[in-house]
Image (tube, rainbow, N blue to C red):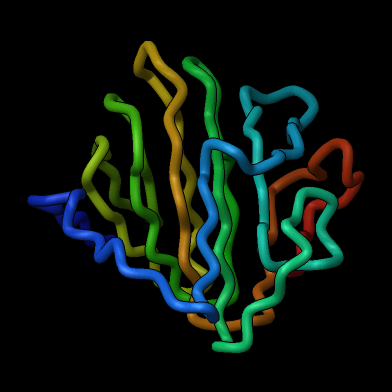
Amino acid sequence: MTIMETDNADSVDERTTPDLTKIRFDELETVEMTQADSETEFGVSIPFAPEFPATTGLELSGGHTVVYTEIPPGKELGTHTDSPEELLVCLEGDGVEIWAGDGGGELAAGEMAVFPAMEPHGLRNTGSETARFVAFFSDSTTVHEFEAPLDPLGDSIVRT
């Protein structure tokens, strides 16, 4: 696991072109996920996966997957594996516990964690505000496998 800090979140180029697609994370519809007998509770949107319930209807052609996640205070995104490497950027929040394999640490807004492919990992929001994340995966087909089924999906495996 690697944690990287960013210095300037305002370095985004504001130019637009006719082919540019922009998405606001705070406007995405999310699906609330839970697991029985655990503190797992999070909202998730997979904006470019047409088969996922919370999507924009847009598809990416670049061979990657983007996942937006919100974790309320005191809740977690339980231990799971992802088929490709995951780059997880914390957009908002502090006091987020992260773990991967035998390692762990904290993540806060403006920091990024890198989780190796198939390495069991998870997140717990110990802060006082909803933590928000965007994750990038280098494969257009990503398999996320959780320790227990996620409701409302009724399955421990999520394919994007």
